[in-house]
Image (cartoon, rainbow, N blue to C red; front, side, top):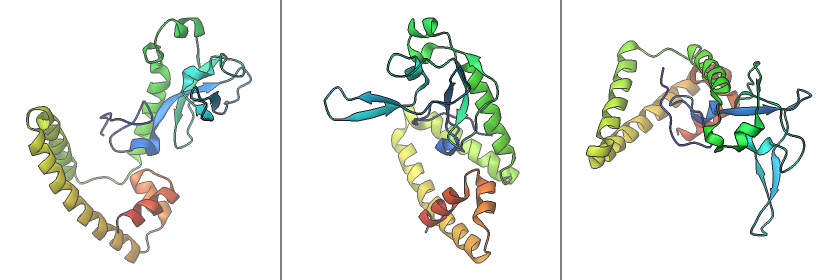
Length: 198
């Protein structure tokens, strides 16, 4: 339902699922394997770092160049369709300018499938959430202080509602798997979230 983008370590995220289902172009080697992080030496002499962005797998830093891209998600999902990488074209522009729309489309379909399995919201609540988000977006430039005040009020009331909901879930002995299915995360993430709501 919500497809707004926000700042994240992943280039592709949705408002509702966030980094639990953060997406990015994944890379595939010629043999069909998925390489691990690329190791880089720090220029400041402070040790070793790693990269997982698709453009780091062009063979210049380590190992052979990846041959294909595919949609990938932080939840472990990988797209089935492979999109060949044209490294000559990729090197001729900034990484963000290279066409990764195929993998992104596949990832979006994955997130839509996840969202379709989530617990449904009452229609009036879903409409109110959309209305509030749109109003805050509209005011964020012209009335930023009003947006801060509104966000503080929402945050306080949301925290109280989360505490009540978490207590109800524990009283009803709802399983972490059921909570995870309802909100689109793993059972361990569901446990962590419920703990954080107290």
